[in-house]
Amino acid sequence: MLIFAVADIMKIHHSKHHATYVNMLNQFEEKQHDFLDKNDLTGQLSIQQNLKFNGGGHINHSIFWTNLAPAKKDGGGEPSGAIAEQINKQFGSFNDFKTKFNTAAAGVQG
Image (cartoon, rainbow, N blue to C red; front, side, top):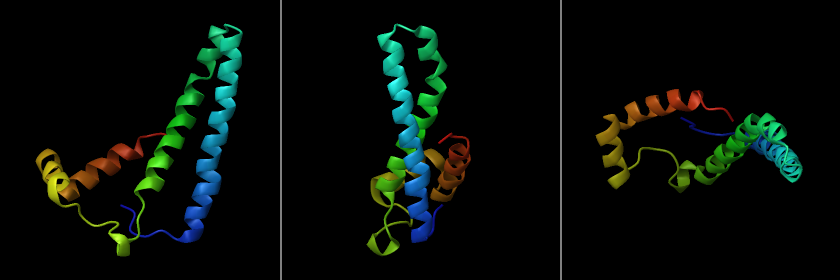
């Protein structure tokens, strides 16, 4: 899990990584509209993986930014209440959840 983040790393991640996903998604969406206008099914199919990859990268990063919070503002740590109960019920413990989450997340593109 992310324990701390250096400001410079987060700036690079936002201005380079996330921005690249957004820019590439925009480019492939423009191509998609062109292919749709021309009724070019082959062209549409040829860019599906690029739309999926860059769209997924954009969504994943948007979720990431939304969920960041400094520890002094209640970020990090173990959840409590209903969410903790549900995690324990489904995964056995918060540590087991983190292990399974990190394993699953490592296989996600973007």
